[in-house]
Length: 184
Image (cartoon, rainbow, N blue to C red; front, side, top):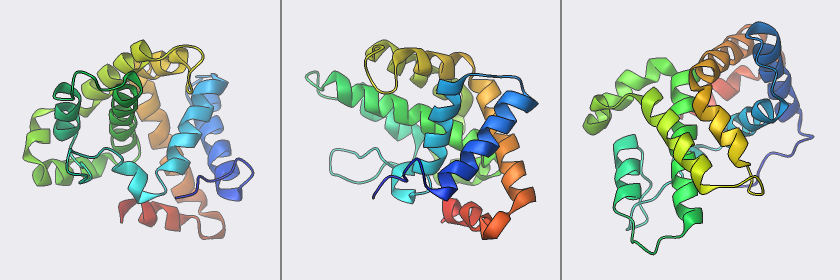
């Protein structure tokens, strides 16, 4: 699964939508946050990236409750990097679904009953906060970006909803297919 390059037309298009939604529409002018969100959207075009966390047997974990269990029951010697990766992914996963496809949450929660008891927004904020504590300003992304994602989670949810509306309205050159690709 090759990452989408920064010069790829899809990434540039998403970058314009995210910048417009966040800078113009909601007044959240934070280039590092915008760049992170563009990266999140382009990474999650690959369905395998949405379900990045695996259980002990190598099976992809699709429920937030299972991801949280993976963080609680990790071997004590689990690396800080592994814990950081899982918490960051929980933040990304919950932000993506609550911001871009909130209508899918009910269906997802029916499929994963334990998730019905969770607030994706609360778990996302918490996960980004923990990830920021496990990282530093030298890590990628820096701790400050993860902290802002936690602090501004609700604004990011709203902004990603605006991004989705923009791509659905614009649909240049058939990019509406991105919408369908994310749901498959």
